[in-house]
Image 1 (cartoon, rainbow, N blue to C red):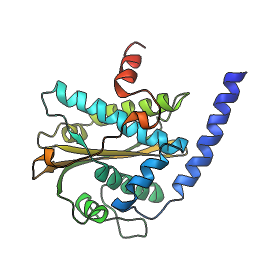
Image 2: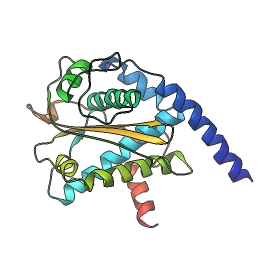
Image 3: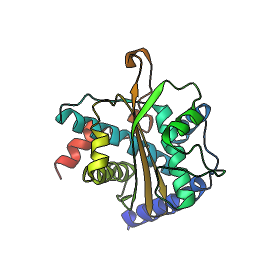
Image 4: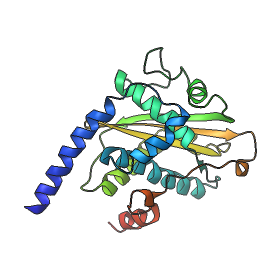
Length: 226
């Protein structure tokens, strides 16, 4: 009975927070990143979405390493670009790489959207992946986030074009964002090259201890033993 009420309470929070997040229509600038990251430590849905990005980053880097590719660095700048594009797709209920002009739009193509977030960006994009699915499943924040990350990775891996993007040899920087909207999960991943030495720039990794949740390696081991 206690387990039932825990799941019911979580679902009620899930629904309420989904509505509040989906109500955000205006695209974000780089200055909003810190506030949004802080929100992900307090809001259950924002936490799942951010934690999904953290787990996905680990899954994809392991995959790149297994194929002899360099691991990519994380960029909150690109995470924000992807977040904006997710929000546009949710508002339009349309899966697309190209945005038309609207109040929710941050630019027609990935390059435009990167420039919107940061007019001084030094990154050049080399691949974008988009999807929606229904994989927000699990009984805890960690389970839901890891399921979203692993199932989304598998979805892109099984598509030749998306898989090619994830394994792009020129990719050095990555950002990915997930947005939960009712039963749907929308996602955008952006991979970029860096014309300069990546070590010269500091990108904040979405560290899981911000959420007091299990880190990627722990979740990877737990799911391997299932």
